[in-house]
Image (cartoon, rainbow, N blue to C red; front, side, top):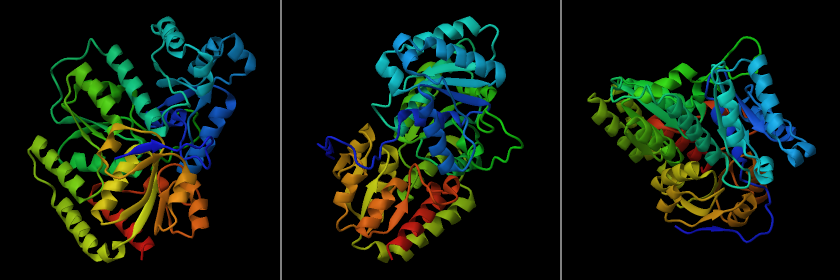
Length: 429
């Protein structure tokens, strides 16, 4: 694989999404939590607007509302005031203070300042607080999400170090879902794991936060996801399963800090990937696969036979976050599709396993590659390019506008793979 950056001096129709947004997304998977964006008020407002449009759900977020003078003379007092107000008014269980490009460029010591604050309030405050450094000028949504989960686990291992032992809870496993998985994807994987008799602790758990959560009344805090008391049980699990290579860091931290072995599945889309996943679960659980999933696999096989004429000789262009791009590439290659262009937001190790050339660029780069493509796959910001090129458009990734059910779309497991193949086949008819 050759991954290269375009030599343009500006970005046209950006694919990249702020790391800070990825951090805010991760916090939505924890119950009674709130992320505090350490930056200007506009940073938080834009993130909230974008996520509300995509998920059609309330988004918990607060800001330190920095202005020019705060940056010049130091932003620590704004952070302390914001923390005091949030703890007093909302009484959250979990708070993450997330940096932005503004505070990182100014050289604000967020981690040091917040750790000092934690020491001062630790004895009188039951809230779980941790800092996350997420500058906008590097990474993207995926790295912001994974770094936030890693920061949470780092702080959790620090707080629970006296409770960690070699005694683990039988048949309890940790599940770390990647940022590219929808809430419905997370629920699908949880159901598969539970079918093998496992008790599953999911962190973060967007399946009960950004989908199927019909809470009464308004709350500034998240109203679904994993509770703090449940998250403390992570250190007692027998195994960790991570879906998405970006979650390998979090899984490694659990192995090093709590002695819990792990397995990373880069993708759970496609027949081969799911066969490996089910075989692995069968091996560690010593249980057979449910007849229901045998039926789902047969349905997928039948779908592959029915749809293969639709994919013959067809070419696609893709622009997605690295984990999501890898998942779609492996699925499309299994279907016999060819690629006219592949674009992602930043480089990661998993992309080295792809033979095709991948560009670190924007949606304008993808448009230039799509002259003979039969299908365009990207977030909704790419739709205008697909229309100009007169190419069928399939929305994927974040953000997606102008359609309902983004949280309920499933692309993992045998059933999710079948649904995705049907979508692709209908657009390539």
